[in-house]
Image (tube, rainbow, N blue to C red; front, side, top):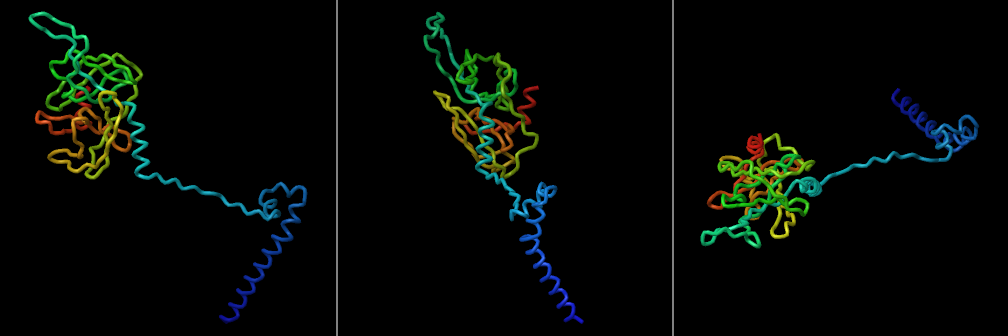
Length: 251
């Protein structure tokens, strides 16, 4: 019984294979020659002996590519900030300085399309007489809107419109999440970038960025959202103000 079934299946397989060969070699070429059938794609392709393979591409985005794309996306909102003294009083007389004296300079970012700029309070000393924002190689005079000691944040305003902006991160950064900063270096204000992971969340939010050049640098996640801003306390220790606190100051 089983032997008969095996023989039957074997014959069906052989006949099917032979039929397929005969069909591809003789039947389909003959059908493809008939006028009303030659325009049917699968008959024409079978008659020509053409095998159609649909190509499927798989796009793989590496971590480095994602970081590079995010840096490129975010760099447009990063600006330079300069605090100057333009005049001094000597022997009871006010003297306008021929060349302004720079008190501090660093980085900030565009927070609204109509000209709000967020930077570190460290870059806006009380003795500053003039604040400049460096954007697209231009120095634009700014006014101070807020300067908050507790958060280390200062909010400036420049008379510009249609400026590029990025969203603030809605979620708190996670432990181990990769974040990056973008800043500008003095005196030419060329941009630089650095990246690290969130090393600690509580009691102190720590990413590992350090150095005076990072003061005022915005911090971004790989989605291109603003996650925070770097500043320094009175002892010169690096601090980070999260995006949720910055949004409150902008209200």
